[in-house]
Image (cartoon, rainbow, N blue to C red; front, side, top):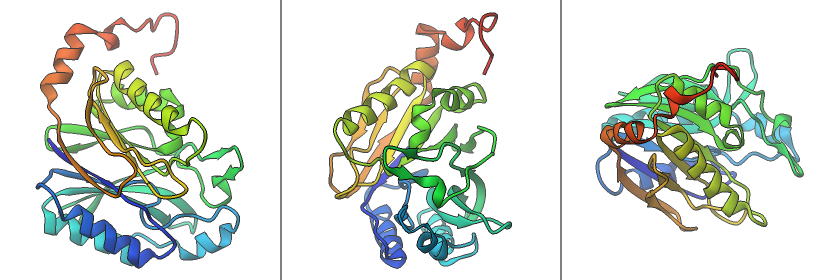
Length: 261
């Protein structure tokens, strides 16, 4: 499967963020799956949560319509992220799989970033969707978002439910040791679950950048630094099958001693 990772620096202007997303995604090689980072549509303002909630859109808003058009124009499945208002009027940090110009699957961030001096729950309501993936080409893709990476149970559940590529769309805030934590956590999720892991990051002043794709053995398939841009990678099921033969982790779990999930 051909995957395009889009690393960008979003801001408070939704139209500019969308235009930049489309421009970057339309460059490079054709792909089966295009993945954007967290906060793609809009960088939230945790200090003024009402401001972000006011700018949030429904699934029939301009942002999602643009992503549906991008899916058709590129003949790709698009995994985008935005501040989305659900039918109950709650604002979600939501990732959407868009295929053939239509929303095919959605995931709302389940672990909100209430850590250090940030309080993401002041803006968003946490998600309650089960950890299941969406089929793209020959892969089942399991979507997670940023802070979810610190909770390995989520990735393990996706792996047990059939995901072979786990994605972390992220606005990973910069700080002392944060880049190292980001890369270590992503590599660990790949190795311990025997699957591909893609970390797709915001960049710019507040964020680390360093989008990366790891294979099941923890090798780097593609990576970026702080620049905006794309990386095109190709991932193969055969490598996962090889890893499963070398390290049959799923079969060797001691579920007699701890929960199956």
